[in-house]
Image (cartoon, rainbow, N blue to C red; front, side, top):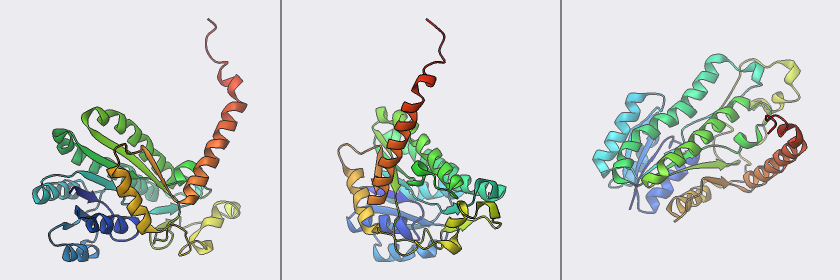
Amino acid sequence: MTTWLITGCSTGLGRAFAEAVLARGHHAVVTARDVTTVQDLADRYPDAALALPLDVTDQQQVSAAVTAGVERFGGIDVLVNNAGYGYRAAVEEGEDEAVRQLFETHVFGAARTVKAVLPGMRARRSGTIVNISSIGARISPEGSGYYAAVKAAVEALTLSLRKEVAPLGITAMVVEPGGFRTDFAGRSLTQADVAIADYAQTAGRRRKEHDTVHGTQKGDPARAAAALIDAVESSRPPYMLLLGNDASDAFRAALDDLRTEVDSWETVSRSTDFDA
């Protein structure tokens, strides 16, 4: 039996992760900005679930959630940084404050929770940190530049973290989901208030009013949750776990495109060193 702390459990993948962890008999600190949205989990699993309010942009709430989880269950074995939301805008359309808040939630919020759980994990020489990214970090669609940027930052942070904590018996991993049938493309998706007409055929096609994906995604959140738990419990957890056929296909296509680009410019790339 392990103890998981999962952020952003009110809906979507976070909710699915929490339900699956509890169903498998583990302890879970289930969190959301509005704790009433996760209280039913604590009511259903009174001995195994602890429902707490958590806004990952608030350092005091982050510290309090970790402390409460440790006091209740003795330690945090697995952290899942899932809290977040989408933001669509052409790069030129992006509003400064909205972009800052996006980075504050996805990047700095993840860093806060990681730093909060690491002292306990280091003391025990065990633990797993899971940072939820997106296939968007790999494919960077038009209109998702800022969202792709925060997820790419999370991935780079996680890779360095993985190298730093591996000698201490701790694992860090990234999860790149594709499209799942959640509220991500609905309630959890924000966008720039002003649309620039010149981007109508690129970023504009992905604005919420033109989106036809919501509610039709192929990904099953329950299956994603089962896959995540299996990966965490594996004897060799991956650095990166892709979730969904669309994510796997898009990732491989992006790798092929990148290799073609690198190969095309290799002569130039290798021409910049001093002569021996």
